[in-house]
Image (tube, rainbow, N blue to C red; front, side, top):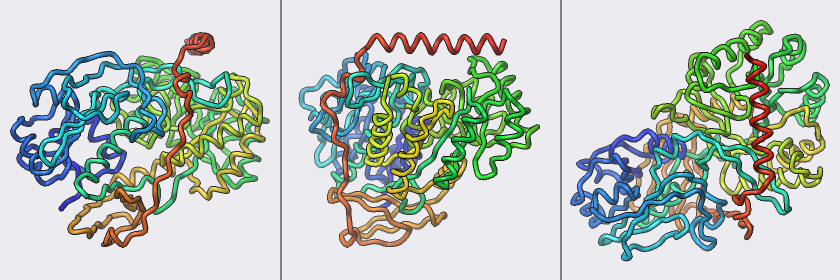
Length: 512
């Protein structure tokens, strides 16, 4: 048996999510769908009710969008607006923070369905030995979003840090979908496999990003000295307004990666002004002998007009939390089509946001080390960013020591992007028969992560009796009881949004 998911009819959003998670899949029609033990059916899938019921009656498992379930099964659904939902504490997703949607969801109206998570509106329909897991979202729509909302991040104190982030928490959506697919494979007594997220058996990677807007030469040199003390290579996204500093300082950082942040510290909604801004920035870098591979937009903003210019300019990757954060790399959808500029999500709360929320130095250290532990449990990369002019280098001295103790693989962002493209390109057919799993790979650093109800492991290409593998139990985060307060409005939200709008208008006027 080929361990793979059958995606019934093409869908850019679903294909991107499966590639991101590394789940083997094939886009197919119902006639060939018996080749896959698990199907995904979305709103645009072409399949009949008879074919769907026959597959489940033969023991197959299906993940289906509620809108598709309504049309195919001829069942009623109700629709309502969902801003965010906190998964049930004692359920499959009880370790996760609020899932932000800010969109209309479809909820089945059928009392015979089994409820998997009432808060997330997840249901299950049994058909013979098979089943359908019904999800309320239009995944394609959600993954296409790049509008922003101010969101607060939990910490054990009254005043919480916040940032303007992608309205949809795409990283959490990916985790929820992956766990549901894992459950459907396990339900058939099959292992669930996906390409591991990091080279070989590395538990994670650590990348450190620096945005140099408002940064003095003294600020940059102090930051560089700390990095060199810890033997770390960071990725610096530079403000090129001061060309002398670009040439005399940033161009001399031979052991660091240098990318473009901006010429004018602003992102526009139109192609032409974005093109002018980025061309000016690249010209200044080229005059200093710097050829950047990466870009990080001012204010973390992203839109299709910016993406068009980034593609024109030949950037290999960028990182904007308006389109994604706390997630694995992905190619954002631009006009329904995946961009070829790889998006490298980061943890979006910088030290500057902690300082604005009146954190003490010890609280800052505690915050970042807590994020490291939280991300480790969710198998996320550890990617943080800082503005050197905000100082507090003692905080990062402590963070770097914590990262060193964890023995994480250190990379620059360009190295992380290169690795991710290699992972995507690797061929990994997976065969399974009577507890014997076999797979090969076209890239030796791309390993496979395997889970059963008993635990998980990460293995290189080879042939394995899964009953003889040493499996580790999963470690999940303990969720705070007061997480809902991160989504309650506070007067400071309005203040910080005002400050953000004011700063953007200032830089737009400067550019004009």
